[in-house]
Image 1: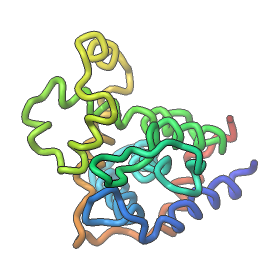
Image 2: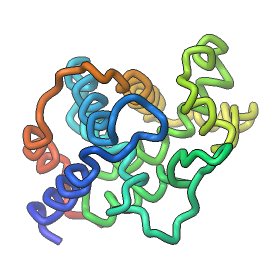
Image 3: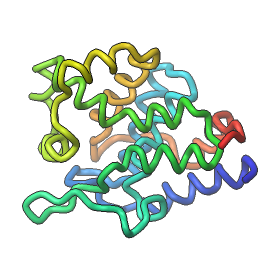
Image 4: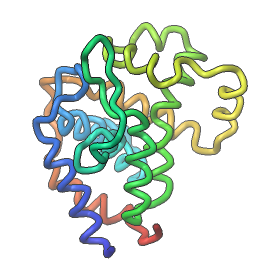
Length: 193
C-alpha cells in the first residue's frame, strides 16, 4: 500500500467515526480523537506522538475492528472493543505507519493500568467510563508489570499519550479539523509493514 492510500484509510476510518458514541463519554469518537491530537500539538509533541494521540482508539471503530471481535459490556452497556489497543496498533502497522505510532497506540491501556497502580490520585480522576473499562482491561498493574513498563524507553511518551487521552472529553472543545491531520499522517508513514 502506498502512502496516500494508507493516509486515506486512516482518514476514512476517523471520518466514519464522526458521530459514533465514545463509550459513555460526552463526545463522539471523532471528537475524542481530534481533541487528543490537538492536546498533543499544543504540548509541542513530536509528530509521531501527536499522530498516536489522534489514532489511539481506532481499534474501537467498526472499520478497523472486525465484527467478530469481542466487546466489553458492563451492566448491559457497550464499553468498546476488547483489545482495541492491539487491534488498532496492528492495523496501523499493517498500513506502514511509523512503528512508534503503533507502539504508543498499543500501550495506552497499559499506561492507564500503570498510572492507577503507581499514582493513587490518578485513579480518582478517571471518568466513570474509564473506571468501568479499567476493570475489564486487567485492573491496576502488579509490581512485575510496573517494573517492565518503567523499563521501556518510550515510557514518558506513553504516559503523555495517556494524559491527552484522559483530557480529550470536552464537548465544547474547539480543535483543528480532521483534514488538517493529513500532512502529519503522511509524515508518519514509513512504508514498513
